[in-house]
Image (cartoon, rainbow, N blue to C red; front, side, top):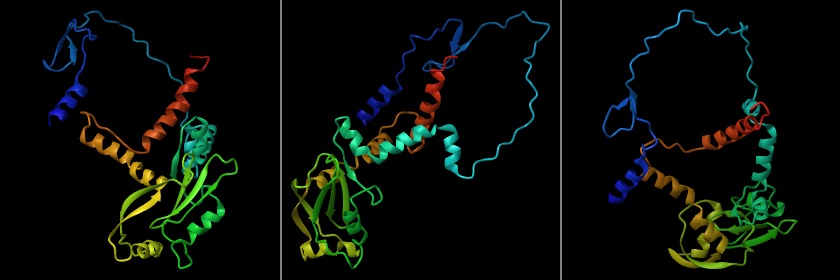
Length: 255
């Protein structure tokens, strides 16, 4: 409770030394909101000059047939294409910047086709991979490693750090799922409820650190400041719109 109070004080503290309080008064002693107390100006004008606005006929523009086209009217397509290029090749881009990257992959991300075929039949009777099976195939440029590992299901990994031979011991429980893809791991456990297993380091480290975003959301929910904090995809879209519209306006020769 003491730490909560300390964090609230740190967040809600304000410095009003820069506020000019001359000819004003505060509504509340503990509030930095000041209201002017100047007397009304007795002088007045006698001929108001309204702003002349041109009369324009109403113009109705039909919305695009697809939401994506509406989005592209506000965000340059070049920005979208560069963002899509980055997300499609995030492992390579991060490696070029000197950062290691590891993450799971979808079947349609350009993963090595023979490995994708194994994933497609993983939850069928045709699956024949045993638990803890691992295969690694590097990309054509040898910069990104494509790894598949058989756990409860077959997992696809992309990594610029792990070779696939790294192993670490972890205690695992026998799964309770009835999915066909989990039959190999059930055969491996047999009647034992818990086993210490040597599993790939890429899977162990990824599973232990993949919930960092969830932990951050949880901490913000517990120790949030006295203002509303929004989370979600809206923030990423807002940053894209601000960047694409704000920077060109700032760099315009008319500014």
